[in-house]
Image (cartoon, rainbow, N blue to C red; front, side, top):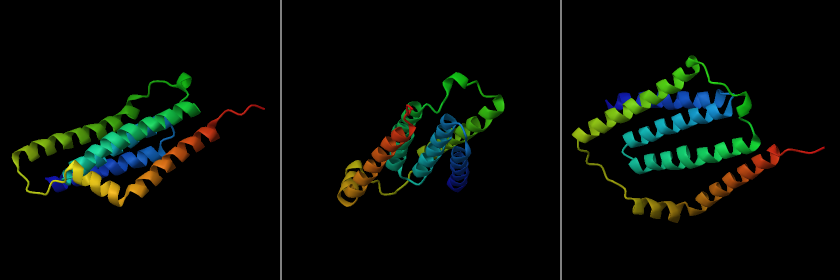
Length: 162
């Protein structure tokens, strides 16, 4: 059953990512990307990495998407005055992807409750020590890249007066 769930979630994650890349409206692209992140988090949970799954939801689906929304609002890409309620067919695919992810989480949670696994559980302390001792510089470089990307987007999107 876990193999089938993995493949179903992999298809949902790849589909959400492709839709995020091809979507023209930036807010809709963020919704598809969040869907992809939730599918990826469920895959991590399926692979017995609940801490990574939790980080995926909190950091990427939460913090980074809020940052993207902030940049979209600053650049005024949403055009809320021109926004209209999408047709039912536009809602169908995101709702379907979300229901597949939710159903997978429910199936995984009920299956895990009945079976007991004997895998090694990595504590938060072990993860943090490994992360910051081995990869501390890389984490700081990535955070600086995110800062530079936001500053660059704001600079490129500013209104120029003639």
